[in-house]
Length: 259
Image 1 (cartoon, one colour):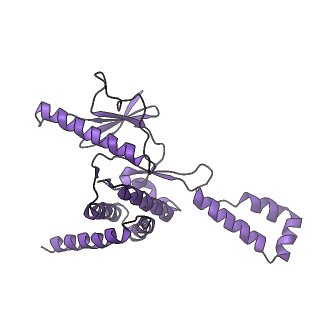
Image 2 (image 1 turned 90 degrees about the vertical axis):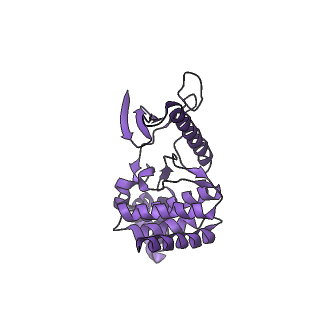
Image 3 (image 1 turned 135 degrees about the vertical axis):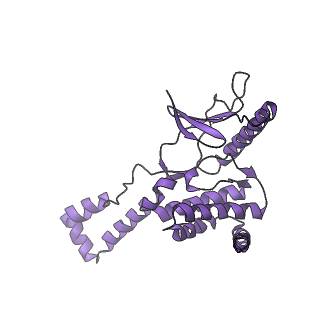
C-alpha cells in the first residue's frame, strides 16, 4: 500500500512498505521536453551521489531491481530506496540526551563526504535521520555487570571495598564506553541539491548551511551543537583550510546584511 509522506518543490516521497520512492514531479511552466530532460539529469546525478556516499556514510540503500535500473517501463525520474525507520533530527535533536555526540557524528559524516569531494548542498537536520542503537536505552540504565557483581554479590562487594572502589569505577567506565560506541547511526538523506566539487569554498558553504540551519531550528542549543559538529569535522584532511574559508564566508554574509 502506497502512502504519501512528503511533498517538496522538486519531488514527492511515497512509502511502500519498507521502500521509499522519490518521484520528481512535472513542472507545467517548463517546456515538456526540457522538463523531462532536467528531471532525468537531476535524478541521474542524485543516484550517482547516493551510490558514492553509500561507501562512506549511512545513507538509504538503493533497491536493486528498482527504478535505478532504467528500462523503457521504468520512469527515469524516480529513485527506489530503503525507507529509514528513525528519528528526524529536525524534530528530535534538542531532546536527545546524547545530542552533542550525535552532532559529532554529523561532523564526521560531513568530513567523509567532503574528503570524497561530495557536497550535500542542503545540510539541515531535516535531511538527517537518527537511528538509536536498540541495545541502548534512551534513559541511561545501570550497567548489568554492576547490578550483579557489585550490588548483589557480597563477595564482589567486599573485593570492591578492598580495592578502594576501583572495580566499580572500572565498570562505570566500561558502561560509558559501550554506550558511546553503540549510540546509534546518523543517516543523511536527500542529495537532490548535491554535486561534486574539489573547491574549499563549496565545502565551507556546506558547513555554513548546517550552521544556519541549526541557528534557525535549534536556536537554544545551536552554538554547542555546531561546536560538536566541528569537533567531528576535524576528521577532514582539509579541516583548517575549510574552517578558514568558512570564516571568510560568514564575514561576507555579515557585510551584505549591513547594507
